[in-house]
Length: 291
Image 1 (cartoon, rainbow, N blue to C red):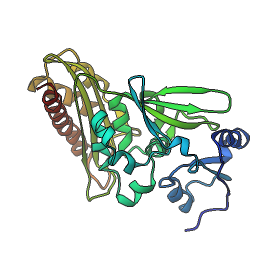
Image 2: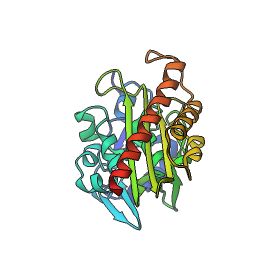
Image 3: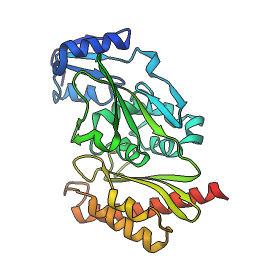
Image 4: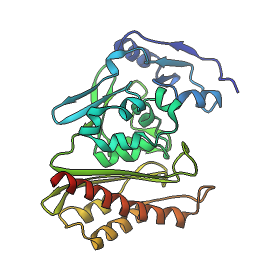
């Protein structure tokens, strides 16, 4: 199917892009890599009057380290994360998750920030940025604001972003001390959307869990932060019993639906299993750093 007619503009600066969005508001749609928007246009699920293509703004294509965080620009592609030695060292959870993104064609064109802003409940990055406690930096002509990942996703394909805003970067707090993470994804075939996916990031203080983030994908209307499970772990020695309790709380937080990928009971139990495995893997990696 062909898209409905739309105007196309590729601004030469971020200021020009923001001015267009201020002028056109809800009539405009921002495109970075296009791997989410173009299919929506072709299926006519999205029919914007104007597409603002920010793909020619090289200032948004960098990965930088600043003030204890790594900053992922709006035009950093999945493959850039996948192949980044710096991120493999600083934030290996992101690199591990990047291998699960669709297929090489999508990874070569699609962007991390574009995927986050698309807010697909089955998208891989949602769980990852929730586990990492990321911040989303949004710019409009009049202001810049920082949105916590936990409050960013409002519903299926819906976010906290305003019509006149562009996300310029993600800020990922750098893991410190003895830390480890893991991303686990159940899919029917290579490159498919997740049936269930879980991201875990934890840090140890001695033998106890000092900090932990758990994100769930494809088991709710949005990516879900398993807050009760996190609280059950912090300050505790991660024994088998504590991990099992946390996994059960994460499963209880999931809100899956019956579909062709599985029943509610099956998906909820896979959350429990994957959170257990993810915590054990992350714990082993954290202990490996310590040794």
